[in-house]
Image (cartoon, rainbow, N blue to C red; front, side, top):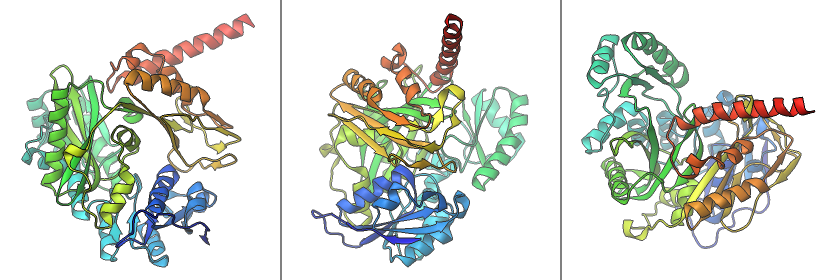
Length: 480
């Protein structure tokens, strides 16, 4: 497959300097997002597609779509050779990896660089340093950024792990050094469990990431997960404030918001300053996210990792700052310096994002791919949809289940919550089950509406929610 579409690049206000054509090495909603930003800048956008994505929205919107392999990601979106061949075929000046797949793969980034193309993101050396959690932790400590008490790098033996755990105290988290997306993590509550879990964690890390390195951190039971968005040009770095990402299921984010409802102005200032300091130390270029755990019981935050790519939840930051992060990363990759000083960036209002996945939350989030036979998007002031859906589209079963992101913005958090509830009630996706039902229920929870939640809150809440749903169904059957 090698198709060319009409319409082409539409940008008028910006004249590209080095990037005339960008290859979008991803799929789904992020591919659509990058294509739109590229077109606004007058750049030609080329999509890569697997067998399963020949009729995708990204393929339809791109100036050209190049087939790179079968539906299995290992033979298409995770195949560097196929992607580089596509880039050379279309004469791409740059490659945008999006998020997931090869976006934090330092070897792939180096291949792009060695092929004479521009990676829309940080350099391969920065990805190698900050994408490795153990190395990132060491770098943070050198920048005087607080880290969770734990090992100073990769743990080399069980004896060393026992010694570290005894020093920092149980429970401890065993984390894959090359991990991401909440994967490769285990918790040990005592020495016996550490002995059992460590080798399992190492094998899992090797299977998932090709690297069996793990490190230890103290486990904070009621932590908040807060991240800071940064943007750099290799010389200067600015932050775009923080996002709250504590509503998680199995360490996968469900709902995000900006700003965090848990921070005081003083803590926010200190948190964002630490993120900027760390990004500056490595000469960061492009958009990046520094993730922290916030221990409310101690009013302390700890750096845990950096994501050297655009994040799924970046739209809430765009909403409160008015800055298009994807477009800015393309400009930076094109050789432009930062257009903003820190004093130029002001946060206002509140924004929330719901991840709408093709999963049935009442059946333990069982994947639910299939054909979309009805599609009605919410609209109105302060409502945004980032998606790859169209009516009649068949959602493939091979990839991440994210269908869309529903983002709302308003002048305050209560107003944004009300707007989100309204938007969710307008949303219609027929033919498949989605997590929209879960989000509607979450917005009725008093603790969530008050912003009083933590990383373990959702799991407990869902157990109660499911029990109530089962009881209600049984009651209806008895009444019938």
